[in-house]
Every structure is written in C-alpha cells, then in structure tokens.
Length: 506
Image (cartoon, rainbow, N blue to C red; front, side, top):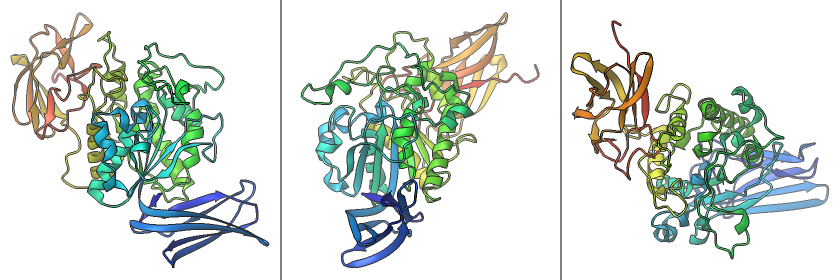
C-alpha cells in the first residue's frame, strides 16, 4: 500500500477487543523506525495511531500487535511505501477501466515502470446510515498489473484515476496511492452527506425513489461469462446506480474518513443534467467543503483542512435535441457559476476541461468518451499547479477578462487573460443574447477578427440590444480537439462561459 508522506502523519487504525493494548511498529528490514502504543476504545471497539511524518519512499513493514492478558494477536502489512494518496470518485466516466479506453492494450502493458503507484478499488455498496468501515472491497491494495487495471468494463481500475496517478508519478518520482470509489449513473446527492443536502435545501428522499431522467441505456458490452454480469450493465445516465440520497457517501466515502489523504479527484455531473440541475451550483461546493471537513477531523487533523480537490468538467454527448441545456448548465454550475476555478466559492480546486474530447463512436455510448489520457493529463496539470504549487505552469485554457461593446461598429471585443489560438472559425460557437420588444433570443455571433489576446465578434445579426454573450454553450460544442479557442500551446481549450454585457451610459 501507500501511506501519506510528510508533512502529514499517516493514520493507522483498526478494530480490536475493548481494553486491549495495541502496539503499531514501523520497520525497515531489522530496524525499527517507530513504535506507537494505544488501546482499544469502547463502544466502537476501535484503535487509532498517527505515525510521525515520513519522507517518501520505502518499502517498510507495518505491524499491529494486540495484547490483552495472555492473549496476543499480530497483523503485518508488507511492502508499504510513503507517498501521496489520492481518492478518486464520481460516476461512470470515473468508473471506466483502463481496458475500455483508447490504446488499451498498450496502457495495460505499461505497468513495469509504475510499481510504486499502488491501487485500491472500493466495491459498489450502499447504506442508509454512515458506516465506519467498508463492507466490501473489489481490489485491496495492489501493485498495478494488466489484470487489475483492466478487470472488466466499469469494474476496476478507474482509467482516469490510474492515468492521473501515473502522470503525477512521472513528475514527482515518488510513490502514489490511488483509491477508486465510484458508481455509474449516480447523482451528486447520493455522494453527499445529509448535512450537505440540508445546506442546499434538498429534501432527504430516503424512503422514495426519485424520478430518473429519460435517457436510453447504452449498448451492454458485458461478457456473459462474468458472474457479476447482470449487475454490471454499462452505466448510462440515469439508468444504473442507486438514487437514494446519501447512500454512497454513507457506504463508500465516510468509511475512509480516518485515512490521511493528499487530495481528491472527481468526475460526476451527467446524471444531474436532468435532476436538481439548478441546485448543483450549491451542491458541488458544499460537497467539497463537507468532504474536506470530514477527512480533516476523521484523520485527527492530518488530512489538510482545505485539501486540493480536482474535477473533470463534463465532456460531450450526442443528443438529438440540440437545444437541451442540461450539460452546458451543469458545466457552468461545476464552477459555482464563475466559469473557472479556483474561485472564491471553490478555493484550492482545479478543473480539467473536456468539451473537446467527444467520441461519437464509443462502444459504450457517446456519453463515455474513450480518450481518458487527455482528461488525466489536463487534470494532472491542475494538480501540479494547485496541489503542488508549481509556478509558471499553464493549467487552464483562456477566459475573457474584459468584454467591450464597440457600439457604432456593431462589434464585441473580447480580451483574454492569456494568449489565444483560434483553431476553428465557425459561426455557431459564440452566441449573443439579442433583445427587442422585451423578448430576448440567442443568435450566432461570427468571429470577425482575432489577434494574440483579443477576439472580435460580429453583432450584425442583432437588430435590438445585445445583453449577453456565451461560448460553447451546447451539449456537443465541437469535434475532437477542434474547439474554437485554445491556449497557444493548443493543449488547453477555453472553458465555456456566459457573461452579461454592460451598456455604459444607458
């Protein structure tokens, strides 16, 4: 396994006989590095120690010995490394395994150099009450192999989680621990504590099943010889996964609260495009705050109170009704309606924009794009900047910092916060809200001209007053890596945005 390295102390805990003494020893070869002694508490029958902060590296052995009178019981864990531990959670795009992505066979065979990246996958379980321990584990701490990275569709190991950890390891060159705890077709409400739901005024639907959005199930790619097959159908929006609020928080997140973590990465939101969509802007920041608080106190203060939290902004999806704004609005709400992170409501967060990673031919349905390498790469750039404080690293695409109406010329001038590359000049990506006679309508605004940091839109289509502008505000904004605006490196796409236009002097 991997335990969290310095500056935090790793928490080791377990169950025992009330009143017994537990001695936890950390050894390397014949040498004892440290010993911690505690006793088993009643009524929880648990014990806990906090190790002294350790430098990255290993391997070590951790031994826990329980003594009560003449009774003696010892457990040992071998090949323990110290490094950074990341928890990965969300719905099916986080659950997709390495065997389901592009270049799967190459990715599955590329494990020899990554034996210090250790993986752990939580089973799909739910509970009406907060649990103190996981009831089941799909994959206990393991070294990566082709078999456990690509165990089967939507089982383990999470591709986004694995690739994110791998990119981090390439940069940091010390051990990384990855814990995957995700379930396809789930709402944010099932991953939220009752405290979070209450903070956003969401009713506790413990005794009623909430209405499912009507989106057709995807083709099931399950192999019939797998015994778990009937329960592992390909998750698609609103088709699989429990809907009762808090049940996955209770069973799949809360039990890990004692662990010392470096941070969390999250990929969820598709299911909320048609369920409590407007409340997502409250729910997501509240979930982040609640997870941070829970893991901080659960780990005796060892997990940072404001640990870094990264997430993937929703990708694209082939939808017959192109005027459905479920996905664009969730993308906006994922940023608490700022359009970027970190922001005042979401401090110490980072985001991978994925609007240009569409995959209309995905065998798992277009809602499950197979390019998870680019997702993880963009996510790890955010982690390097936000979680690891790397300076002068561009980790997000360009956003307008100034929007000016050039009224006499019928033009709108957008000044970006970084140099831009305009990759595609279509007439649809930018739209303006045009109002006349108290009625407003979104109209296309073609790109007139652009330079290194500015872009000018043509407003001639609007005969009334232009009151707002938006970018990439559709479910499927562009073809693969062909969105309109990128950072000059062309690696990072501009995130979608919507903004009011002020009319000075009116």
